[in-house]
Amino acid sequence: MVIGNWLTGLLVWVEITNYVLTNYALTNYVLTNYALTNYVLTNYALTNYVLTNYVLTNYVLTNYALTNYVLTNYVLTNYVLTNYAFTNYAYSMIWRKRLLRWLPWLLALGLLWLVGRTIPLAGTWAALRRLRGWQIVALLAANGLVLLAMNGRWAIILRGQGYHVPWLTLLGYRLAAFGLSYFTPGPQFGGEPAQVYFLERDHGIPRPAAVAALAVDKAQELTVNFAFLAAGVLVVLQGGLFAGVVGMEAALFALGLLALPVFFLAALGIGRRPVSGLLLMAGKARPLQDRPAYQKIIQTAQESEAQVAQLTRAAPLFLVGAFFVSLLGWLALIGEFWLMMTFLGLPLTAVQTITALTAARIAFLLPLPGGLGTLEASQVLVLGMMGFDPALGISASLLIRARDVLLGGLGLWWGGRQLRRP
Image (cartoon, rainbow, N blue to C red; front, top):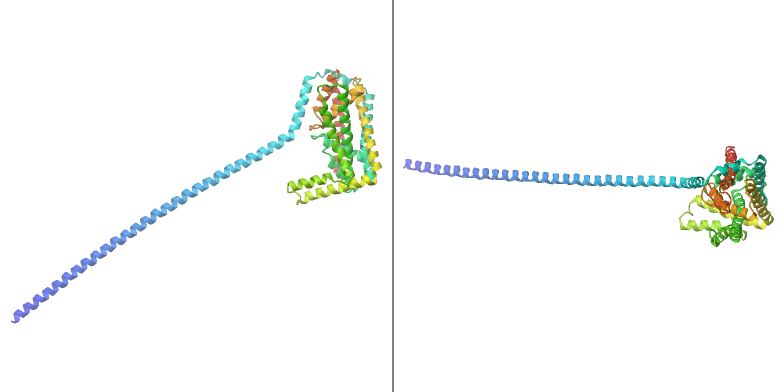
């Protein structure tokens, strides 16, 4: 009985132990399997995360690098093209300015070469060698009368304003302005600012008054010049010297030129302000009125126009006297031209003299420096059509050229000397 109970207990203990061990084994297996599964899943998740992160990071970095490369390449390409275009435009503007600067000289030299190539120069030098010393002195004296009249006109206008400037001093100013105008394209204008500057600096004349005097002087000069030009064209038409070459259109053009200074003086005389009015209109068309420099120009123009109106009312006899002196100066100029042609062996009639001189004045109106080439061509053409030796046209042109170069060079020397004065 005791042994039976013991065996029963042993069996129970074995069963319990077996159950516990089996349960332990199963539990251990489950836990181990769970741990391994968790480990695998965790490792898979981490691996997948790392790989995914790597791929995304690589994609982002690659995309950034490509985008940065494309943008950098675009910016550099755009910069290079823009820089090239700007550089090309800058060089184009530089060459254009240089071409415009030298084009008048090139045209003048080309025309001069063409005239010299078509005309034998033996007769030109022979006519010049026949000149005597007293004849050259006579031509200089005749030109002195022209200068006396033209400079006297300016002096009379200044006196009408109440300013007394020595005649020789004014002559120096005029020659300095002539030198600047002569050696630059367009001999009719160019040196006038120098005249205003010298009057203002050396004589204390206010700038508006100096500009007003010069404006009246220049307007009267152009009036007489264009009046002679219109009269010369009418003489040519009346005489039929150049039938088929010069028509009524030339006369109308000359009269149109004459109307410009006449209307200008008339408008100023009745108190109108044509110059400042045009400046105001130009300032509105292009935004310039707010600029101080442009406002100063308009103010000077308005004050100068008021000075001219005052001069017209207060001293009309001075203006009439100045205009009369201008006419005397042109008579002296015609006499000088006729005398020069006579000394060269060209017995021109009055009509022929006026015709040749008209051609010379037209040549100087063209926008070439000093009428270079155009003067020579005009005299060769006119004398040839009148039946004279065209080579003598070159002789006359060389005498005119020598006179003007001498006066222009003297003016530049004198003006430079005045500018160096303290």
